[in-house]
Length: 291
Image (cartoon, rainbow, N blue to C red; front, side, top):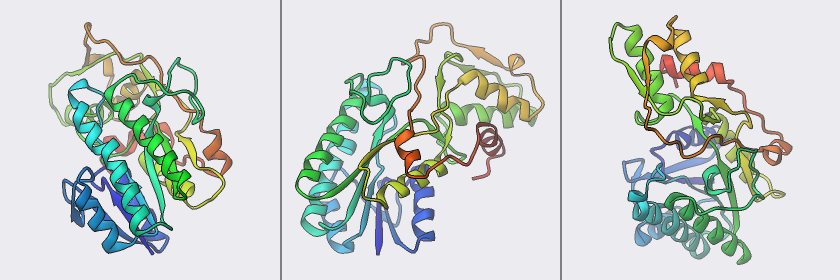
């Protein structure tokens, strides 16, 4: 059996591919940045050709531009919204028995700072959220046509494979440089903002668990534990024996998108999933840069 992963260049796809292989699946990865197949999930003909050729048993749509900025409006729509339609229609035509996983996000929900579950209401708070909502509704429609479609609403997850622009990796990288003698100062936004710091490998395990069962179609995936950015900064600098206050500046004009974003992972936990990597263990992994 084959597992086809779109968006294979991301951190979650890396760990998911490992899990698929460990479970005996022949894994095929596709990405614009180059996996086994260089392809754009927003291109209908490319997606159709790949699904037709490989006839996969599992299809994972993980591709996305990881930003909520308005400037990414059309990029988000092409990759997430149109990409989802391309995947689902190609599966319907060429691999109708396949299980399809679609990536949702914690930011597509109404957020009042309380734990968010998969049954909570959506909110069009950004172009990214709108595209995620389009994707979920398309998945539900194709589910009504008989496809087995799963949605995992992912909350913040991190790993040493995170790209340099993400705050978690930016902080970990700065610690390594400062510990090595650099005199640079780290500039951050609002350190009081709280979010989850779940290990991407644990999230990949949850995704795989979700698609391997038949009882649950949608689930919020996260640790359910929120930590402030300040707590992450402190944990990372402490690993190098440094006082973060001597090396970090806060942007006074920064306006945070939210104050707290945290999941209610009761549904995925009911299937037997628990995160294995703690907040402190994750900080250690990322400061050391060991995936």
